[in-house]
Amino acid sequence: LWDMNIPYVKAVAEADNALSELVGAGKLDVVVSTDMDFLLSGVPRLWVPFRNRNDGVEEILLSKVLQEETMTLDMFRDAGILCGVEAFRGKVSIQSSLAFSWIRYYKSIEGLLSSTIKEVQFEHLKDNGTLQKIRDSFKPTARWLQAIRPDHYERFAAFIDGL
Figure (spheres, helix red, strand yellow):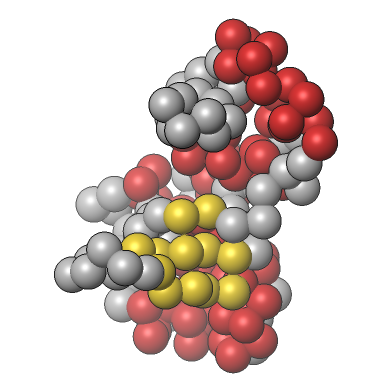
């Protein structure tokens, strides 16, 4: 990118956080990744590179997914959490069709937890504050500037501010 004179920035920590923050700040319209967790973060447009070819991407529009799944973003996020996210790796992993059905019916993980459905994996969702912490990890914090290395922001400030 440097050789092609294309502006780019490096993240202070994991790039996922910086990308989510930039999307939340309205600085990016699309993220290119195979990580579907970006949709849980509210990324409106995800481009997934074709795995067997180098000539394109599959475009996933969050608004279309939410419409087709008849869910709000909060419901979609809860269904995704039930399906298994990094923070619950090995602790919560419900089959996606079941997770989405439960959330459509019960509207939230709290609604599901107060139902008559009992599942051993739900115990990890009841931990004090853990569920909210995980939900919050998918929401931008408006600290996008802190997610970018200072030397990169200084170099490309005009470009980033212009977005």
